[in-house]
Length: 183
Image (cartoon, rainbow, N blue to C red; front, side, top):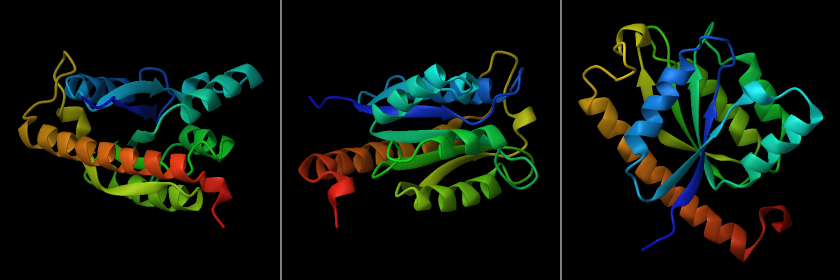
């Protein structure tokens, strides 16, 4: 049996009462039975002090890939997510990044388009597969369960499987030759 791959679930919103908690909890519940993954929540809400920044850096460094859960605001992603991304550099390098986005009609895909550019600059590899939750306010019931989840759940599971594949491949490559030594 293979050792589970460590994936950081990056929460992209810090506002109190954030819908990001509901979406992230759904992702965690849906993927908890996936023996290929060991999910760890990374919450930018904790950014602020030097000590908190150090701990977040350690969390980012300790994982082999990421799922970024992000809303879309004004055709982009939230500032605190940008701050989290920009605060670190090598922690993102040579690791795969997948996205779960949410919002209005577009389901957050414009935020993901911009995040792909940002992560490319950090030498991270973004997956084509992503989960978008349009009209998110109508998608979850009072208990945080996704209504009509079938196809969306299947998309999340396929994305997670491909993320694990990329994370394993890149983990082997980093072990063979550290990325910062590639010339």
